Length: 375
Image (cartoon, rainbow, N blue to C red; front, top):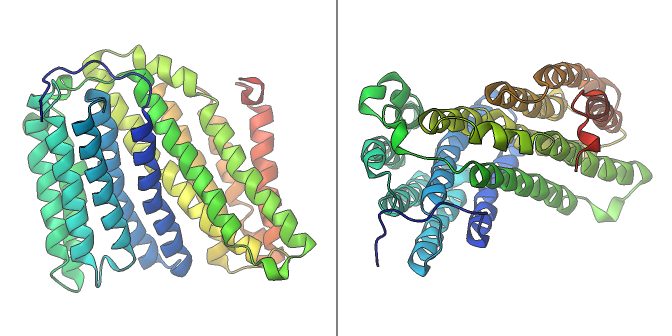
């Protein structure tokens, strides 16, 4: 394997990166499936822990390919090894806290090791050396959680996420945060990469919804709900991509050192509620399609309204961090969507779904940025 200390800058997203994203999105569909089975507070807490550690490393790979574009065969093969790690971790997700924790932990350790190995080919070696102890330490904590039981499992998982995503900000002098200038971000590639991930995640949610339909008992109400189930992700798509060009310009116009921190603020932390919103919304839509003419449980109605609101609030935070768009319209729409939850629990799931779709349509039409008129 020939190592390259200063690879050429990242250009457009490559096909192997898109394939990587499709593998990663399988972890999101796993989260939706887990959430549908357990909408309790404990279930939501487990989802947050799983998503937190997985999303941290997806972000790590987005930064990786921004520094080391996968152009050589050896680089692509290592990316496939990283994909294998994500896939193994995803297979171990359903019982990651009480049965298959070792499987998840081993897959996650592979993800970490491949990431660091490839990153040594970049010109950000100083930053990589600061990054390694936090990521490897977190992976070992998660693997250790697979060998214990009870509260210790959750304590180790929480410690792992804190070690990766929180401690570096508390002690920047000794972490990668203090060496942010060692990392560089190619704005066009970075924005395109995260946009494609959101696009694939929305597309996979539509596929999962369609595959979950009971074709033996189709009614007019069910068909109407299916159509609305397509319109809703479409509106979320329109919401996200209405400011994509402005986000790219804003990121490109930031100084290199500050750009690294801004990228983390906007494309990691602000995207947590955004992507979780997609996961939770998909779970709520499934319930609405299953019983479109009837009320659903409060938890199912809350999943639909809460998921969309979470997406909108995450996107508003993204806009605020980047200094673009109209965050206020997203916040108002999120509040309006939350107010529709009683409709699903007291009236019918189909009417609830239609109400959420109508609110988002109004937001897109009224918003001063006029996203419906942009190309």
